[in-house]
Image 1 (cartoon, rainbow, N blue to C red):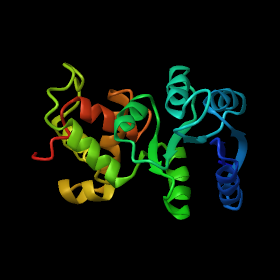
Image 2 (image 1 turned 135 degrees about the horizontal axis):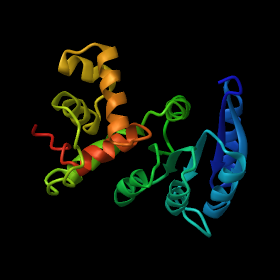
Image 3 (image 1 turned 90 degrees about the vertical axis):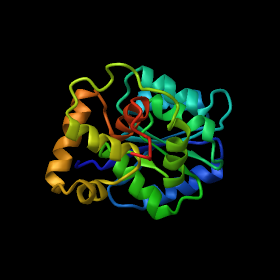
Image 4 (image 1 turned 135 degrees about the vertical axis):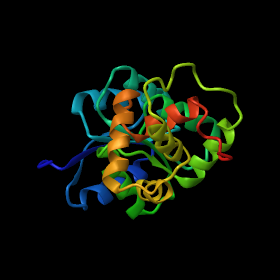
Length: 218
């Protein structure tokens, strides 16, 4: 990507936006293309500027960040969205991922982790804080069977890979767990994304939850 990763900042706190802008603009291959002060502004500017990644606050005036994610997801916008918040908002995590966000991080995440997250999201990877992933697993384990036919066409081995992704394991951890090569794991993930119509890893996680694969007892 010769132009680098283009980032939009959406937060009603001017000082926090300024901090993010300084961090992003001082990083090679990253640049801020626009800023938004509320959810509606975030939707409008995302459509206008077509950023690669949006850093979206949850609590903003006029329209909150979660509603903005749903609006953008519904329009099929290509931007990857990372939701940032100062609060560990359990009740919102599933909703925002289901709406199409690629990640969820707390605002006290280290600068290095945040920058890595922007790069990961732009590449189509999910970005979930470990505590968030664990709570999602705990919440949806035992919540009942997944949607009928959700995994139609998925092979047993692909199902094993999806189960590990759902539980928060990285590709490297999945390789060791299943005794597979890195290339083979990536191939299975690519096929899963095609079969489940998932645009990134976060949506694979959602498919896994909805299909009952978050059961940590397996």
